Amino acid sequence: MKRKEYLKVVLILPGNVLITIPFLIFLFSRNSYSFYLVAFDNFLFYVAMFFLALGLFLAIWSVRTFYTKGGDGTPGPWRPVSNLIISGPYRYVRNPMILGVVNLLLFETALFSSISFLLWAIVFFVGNIIYFIFFEEKELIKRFGEDYEEYKNEVPMLFPKFSPYNKG
Image 1 (cartoon, rainbow, N blue to C red):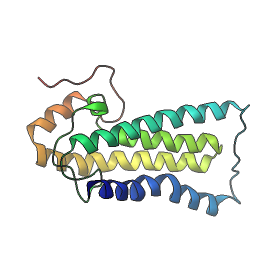
Image 2: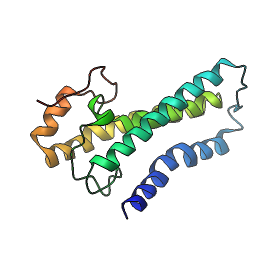
Image 3: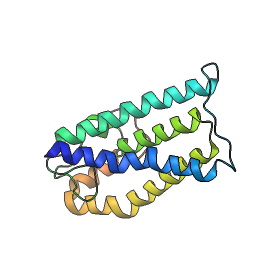
Image 4: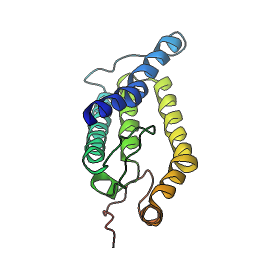
């Protein structure tokens, strides 16, 4: 059952962010903005591959850590995990899953040389910062109390630190 829940979360959340919305952006803005797949000999192709590798690494590591350490629940807000996760990538940054998705959006931006996709990546990034500050973090403080407060004070929200957080 837990695998089905995780599959649903992956299809609904990153699936819409990385596939559905960019496809709609393409459909509705292709007459106003240019989209083209960059060639192998274009520097942007290698920038795109960097963002792809980094994004996949962060997303997979984050979801795997969530799955093994989160207890009941999923990364989806409709069924939050029961354990405060402070291991894996969460020792370096509080929101590695979102960083992974932002890097995948930057991959799409570079691969298709698209200003429209870049604007979508910025909207997604800023929207998530607002959501984290005004909604998610308040809920995490209610659920995990002082443990989350300490973690929040030691681990940056979006820009990873180089040394891992070690409680205690």
